[in-house]
Amino acid sequence: MGRSEILPRILFRMAIAAGCNRSPPAAEDVGVDTVIVLFNRDLRVHDHPALAAACQEARRVVPFFVVEPGLPSGRRGGFLLDCLTDLRASLRRLGGDLIVRQGEVVAETVRLAGELSADAVWASADVSEYARSREKRLAAECKRIHTEFRTFPGVTVVPPGELTPNGGGDHYRVFTPYWRVWSSTRRRPLLPAPARVVTVPGLEPGRIPSSFPGMRIRPVDGSQASLNGHGGSRGVPAGGETAARERLETWLRLCVADYDDGHDDMAGDRTSKLSAYLRFGCVSPLEVVTRAEAEAGGEPFVRQLCWRDFYHQVTFAFPQINRVDYRPRKEEWREDKDALDAWREGQTGIPIVDAGMRQLKSEGWMHNRARMIVASYLVRHLRLDWRAGVEHFFDYLLDGDIANNSGNWQWVAGTGNDTRPNRVLNPIRQAKRFDPEGDYVRRYVPELSHLPDRAVHEPWKLPSPIKNYPKPLTTPPAA
Ligand SMILES: Cc1cc2nc3c(=O)[nH]c(=O)nc-3n(C[C@H](O)[C@H](O)[C@H](O)COP(=O)(O)OP(=O)(O)OC[C@H]3O[C@@H](n4cnc5c(N)ncnc54)[C@H](O)[C@@H]3O)c2cc1C
Image (cartoon, rainbow, N blue to C red):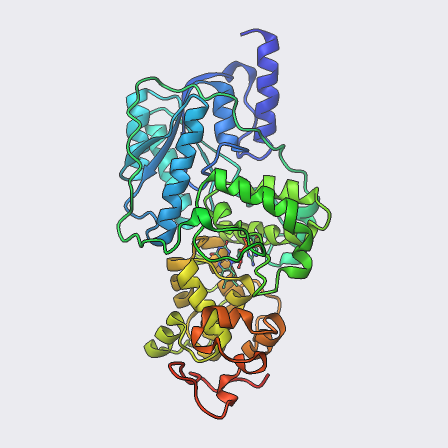
């Protein structure tokens, strides 16, 4: 290989390594024969550091996904299937394919590496306890068969663990100082989709299943769903990078400038709805941030994406975040199955809470303000354990992810990263402030759809009870 070919490769690898957990390679080990790129929560071809590096450095690249028994069922499963189908189509357009096998990730990857005598397995680093134990097992198994295993950035904007507080500690515990440092940190460059994916010829691609066990039918064909503020949020969106990129384009062109004023307007539904795409990595968070920063008024939106990075770095440092109090709590939680069921079903008798819980069930998504209100109601008013909330959200949210879900639940429960851990949200006051006309409640609680604005948030004040709508489960707080 001539000097003129080696130099750009080295520069490219240095750029990748800027966010990677390995130092740049020496010139003599540039260039490998076969690299398996193991996909997981990074289902895209644009700005995918592991895929980009493999296409740059390897003679043959084998994009790979393992359908595991524990993969999300329900709507999240349907969304994932869309993502895989779309990723396969993109890779095929680039000359490659997505090889899909069923089984356990580590065993199947090692098996494929053995079959192909692959030089390396490359993947995007993730943060959850399960993902990290899988990375560890993969590293050990790859070592055993003399195959390199390496992780790359790509799941967050700034790799977790990269920013640490001046005063010591392995992660930031408070958001604002993290945001300050995060905003001014130099980032790796954005990477285009590879021009070509040259793969191993004749490999059996494997079938993308048509459903996962326990998968529920989606109520509305997501391809019809339009961007919020431009037709409402009903229906489940189509998964995949193509849909994600369309949504991002529309969002940046039409809506981001309005985000600061509109993001808490529950009925107006004026947030990006990018969360499920970010959850599955259909779009790179670095690309979303970089492009939003270039738009007038983009900063408040970028700040929310920093919250995502924040909880990912907390999870990286505290991987048991979905099970264990981050900040230990002394009091016991109550146990009350009936109250928990009423909360889950949107039958608490507090309209704003019921509206949020019913939106979750019908759409697989809930407005952020509603998430805060229903979570606060569960832990502060019903005094039930936040873990029950995490579990229910995780079952239904398309964007359900361990770091964001558990981090936010613990924040609301006062066991997490809130600097005011005793904060209680009054659901009635919140409702009047963020759904002043009651449209959000009327949309999701049809029993109340006939009520005028002033009554919809406090139906118990009406002279006669509402047919088919429960009395409040707890004494409603004064507005
Ligand atoms: C109790 C509770 C549970 C939550 N569970 C999840 C979850 O499982 N998955 C998830 O992605 N978000 C979760 N969130 C955060 C937030 O509600 C969603 O990210 C947001 O509503 C998604 O809609 P959007 O894409 O339109 O957001 P936008 O307002 O458009 O924000 C853009 C992106 O920023 C990120 N973001 C925004 N707010 C937060 C936040 N508070 N914490 C972390 N990241 C944020 C998301 O990736 C989001 O897609 C939770 C919040 C609460 C209060």
